Length: 160
Image (cartoon, rainbow, N blue to C red; front, side, top):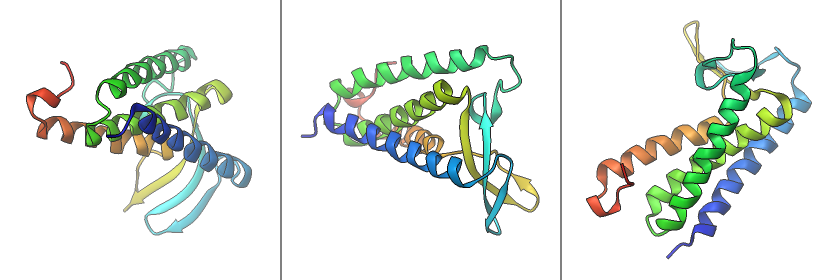
């Protein structure tokens, strides 16, 4: 049976991959520069002081600390849940992805005051907001968490 440490290791791997990808981008792409990758995909360098979809990005700076504290609190809760449920593989995998992504973005908020985003998808003139590896891990983790809760027996669900 997996132990919580395995799931913490996965969260750590997400953080390393996220920070490594951002390091590469910060050293190879100028702010605002767009690099064509495919008809639906560009590399860009942007800084998002808000949350997903630039939520609260236009605020004067308090959101940096709000989202940092929120991510740390959620990560702390996840760390406890991983200790309680290490054998529930899908649930723990989902939580580890969310925790790793949240902490990866916390590092950016502390270092830069904003989250480094660099993946831009677009179709027919519509551009999805830029995102990063941490955001992807959070999204995949949230989808898997929802799936795990919809398919779990009552004994294997998170407390409500």
